Length: 99
Image (tube, rainbow, N blue to C red):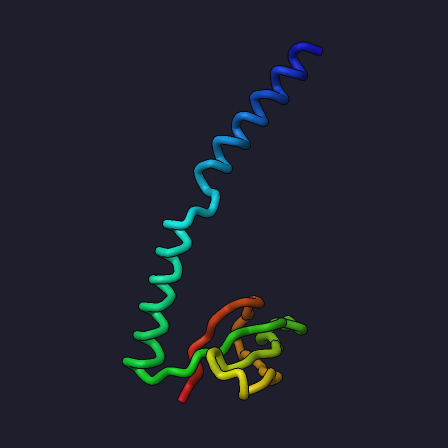
C-alpha cells in the first residue's frame, strides 16, 4: 500500500512539473499573436497571397483529401468544398492558394 501511494505521489509531482513548464502564459500568448501577425503581414500584404483555412476534412484517400475551406480573413467568402491532390490536410491548417 505504501509503495502504491508513493508511486502515485511521484506521478502527480511529475505531472505538475510538466504542466508548469508547458502551461499557457500571457507572454507566450503575446509572442504567438505577434508571430502570427508577422507571418500574416508577410504572406498577405507583402506577397499578395491568399490563405485558406481548413474547417473540416471529411474524406481522406490515398491520392489526397477532401475538406471544407474558407478564405482566411474574408467572412463573405463562405465555406467551400475543396480537393487536395496528393496532400492530406488537417482541420485548422492554413494553406496558401495557388494563383
